[in-house]
Length: 410
Image (cartoon, rainbow, N blue to C red; front, side, top):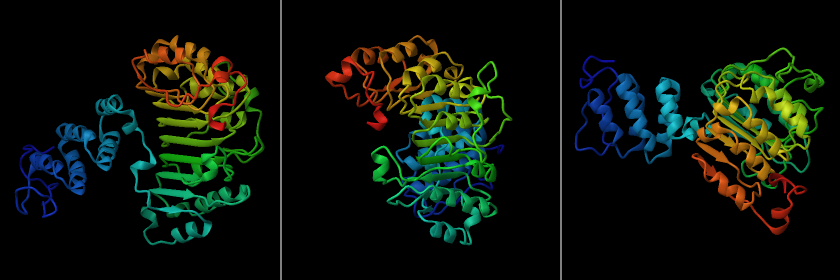
C-alpha cells in the first residue's frame, strides 16, 4: 500500500471524456481518484476502478464492499468476484452475510459470449488464435428428435483431446440449450455420460454445470468401468470404502436433470471437493433408504468442508432428505438450503424445525412442494428468508399427498 494514499501511483489511470465528471483529462491520484471513478455514470469506468481499488489494501476492499449495492449487475458481480478472490476471511464473511448469491462462483462471473451447439462449431472454435485465453465455455448441445448418448460424449472427447489449448478454462456448461422445450417439460434428449475425463483434464475448473438426461445406472457419470457396488461398501460413518478422488479447485457443481440414480449420487458424493461452495443436484429417486446412504459422505461435511449452498431438488423422498439434513453436520455450515420441486410434507417440515441450526440459514427454499398452509405458517416464523412459491394445493393434494408425483416431474 502506498505511504500516501492521496498521491498518484503507478496504478492510477487517466480519466477521459467518457467519464462525465467536472474535470479534464487529468490524473486522479491515490484512493481519492478511485473513489471518484467509482461514482462515474459509465459502467466501464466503475469496473476499471474496482480493479484499481485492490491496490489500496483494506481501504480499497471497503470501497469494493460498497459497490455490492451498485445499480449495475455487472459491477456487483465483479465486486463480489474480487472480494471472493482477493479479500480475507472477514470480507468473505461479510459477502456471505450480505448476499450469499453474490458469494457463489457461477457462469455469470464470466463473459458467456462463447457458445457452441455442434461438434463442428466446437472444433472451429478450438482453431481460433485466441483460444488459449478462453476462461468460460458454453456447450448448448443441439436438439435432436431422438436420444443420442454419443452426442454428449463426443463433446467430452473433443475437449479432453484438446485440453492443452484451454489452459485457462475455469467455467464449463454442457447439456440442454437454455431454450430447450424438452427441458421445460421435465425431460431431455441430451443423454449425459462419463465426466471423469473432464474433471481430470481440467484440474483448474471452478464451475461445472450439466443439464440433461442421465440414462440408467449402467451409464456411469464419474468412472469408466462398470459400476461397483459402492452402496454396500461403507465405513461406519456411511462413507464409501474406495480410493478417494479429489478435485481441488471446483467451487460450483450443478447437475440438473432427471432420474439421477443412487449409483450416480454415490459416485458424485465419493469425490472430495475441498473448495466446493455450491452444490445443486436434481434427484428424482424412489428408494428412500438408498438415497440417504448415497448422500451420507456429503451430509457428513467431510467431502465438502466449505459448502455454503446445498440444493437437493426434485426428489420424491424429500422428507427423508430433510430428516437426514436436520441431523447432519453440513447444516451447521450452510447459508442456503434448496429442497424445491419435491415431495416435502408436514412431516419433513417438522424435522427441519426441530433442528436449531436451521435458524442460521440465510435462505430456505421449499417452493413447489404442495405444502399445506399450516406447514408454511410455521416455516415463516423462521429468522431466515423463506422462498415458498407455487405450492399448488388442491383438495386431493391437501388431504392426501402420499401418492402424488413430485413437482419437478408432474
